[in-house]
Amino acid sequence: MKPNLNVNFAGIKLKNPVLSASGTFGYGYELADLIPLKKIGAIITKTITFEPRPGNPQPRIAEVEGGMLNTIGLQNIGVKAFVGDPLEKLAKIGVPVFVSVAGHSLEEYAQSAKVLSSYKEISAIELNLSCPNLKKKIVCHDLPLTADVIKSVKKISKVPVIAKLSPLVADIAELSLAAQNAGADGVTIANTYPAMAIDVKTFKPKLSTVKGGMSGPCIKPMSVRAVYDAYPVLKIPILGCGGITSGQDAVEFMLAGAAAVSVGSASLVSAQNIIKIIDGIEKILAEKNISSAAALTGKINQAVNIC
Amino acid sequence: MQKRFDKTYDIISNKEICDGYFELKIKAEIGVIKSCRPGQFFMICVPGVFLRRPISIHDAQKGEISFLYKIAGKGTKILSQIKEGEISMLGPLGNGYPQLDLKGTLNRIIIAGGTGIASVHFLAARLKNKGTLYYGAKTKKDLLCLDKFKQLGWKTIISTEDGSKGYKGFITGLLEKKLKSDDCIYVCGPAPMMKAVIKTAKEKCISGYASLEEKMACGVGNCQGCAVKIAGQIKMTCKDGPVFKINDIEL
Image (tube, rainbow over all chains, first blue to last red; front, side, top):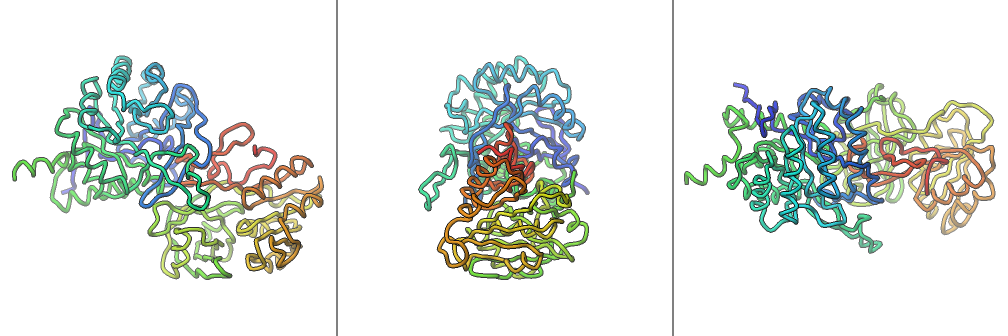
């Protein structure tokens, strides 16, 4: 029997639990010639801010063992430009669209959410509360501010609001719970890890901002741990994210407690990887004789309890 | 939109052509070869490193595509050790040099520094009007494929930093006096050389194109790693370039 890949994430029906992670898939439609975009569970756009941003100076990318560092600096066209042509093209793909939103301040998050809330093409808002590229302190390191941003966006948004969290906090369960209590409909665990690299030929940092966000297979075990720690305290679903490059990786996140996963850096390596991950999950389910992907979520916990 | 392919190819050969420089040849079908234009590149998958490597097309004809590269780090080192089998890559990517068959009266001048010679070879092969290659390298040993340019009917002028062949010093030292307003230049090389040439070209109102290089993760515009400022706007080297009009490049 063909396993059922459908999942329900925060009330949104997805044909499979694999989403494109923010900032790694453009606005989606640019890859139409390379992969069947319709197969993807949902597309999370690159992060949009209220005003357009030029992003950070060069260099913005550095490869590290098993992954990469980036400091793009939220380069984007701004919310008003986004809701024009890009959103129209995105909607035509025919998969749910999650729009990633960030801001310098609580007000900027709310302003963007206000613009977005009038577009029925948008299925959810993902709040980027953890982008470590901003020069100021990140939102996730301030629990009251995290709660306030979520509350203010929730007040305006007509669609589910997902809080994307930084993994670099003392207690990811506490932060996830704070997001849930503030009204978040789901959490993404996790964003990139603050990291840096230095070129020993020149003694210069490899990124223009010295520090950036680390992603790729090298972070996967840390993000699986973060999902595992948050899962028991939450009622809202978790979108697992961090270094997923195969169906096995995706299943690992789901066993730790994720209801769905998002794929980031692997899509940069090859757009085809996201399709391979979807097929990989299906294959594992078939091999294990598990009828649905949704049944994987948190399965590791149940096994521990039985023992 | 132009055609690009994400697939595996059979390796024909991957030989060291001189100390530290390799030429990878792969078997490609006519559809892929027809899509390749000078200045474009492929993202080549190298096992053992995370990201694919952007490498420009050195030549594309008669059922094969070749890439000329220097061992610069772990990725290219591993790549140089792959001698047979299949290799996976995405391409051709980016915008190459335009108006190759434009006749006109402009003198065609190609300016290459170091491994910049790799991509301009394909340009020299496809340009209708032949011209002069100015080519600077570290030493005599680092001079590549001069014979190929000569075969294509190009005049070559050479400089080496140590003076082991041609003019001693940087190629830019030679160029400054030679460039004229009826030249059309094509530049590819290390950043300091490009900057010097672009500055001279702008001062003398010489038109032309430069192929830029920035660190990139995806090669298709999604990571936004390779942003550059072009005519007041942020552009992606991978998608909008790597070839830009010299006049539009902001230094």
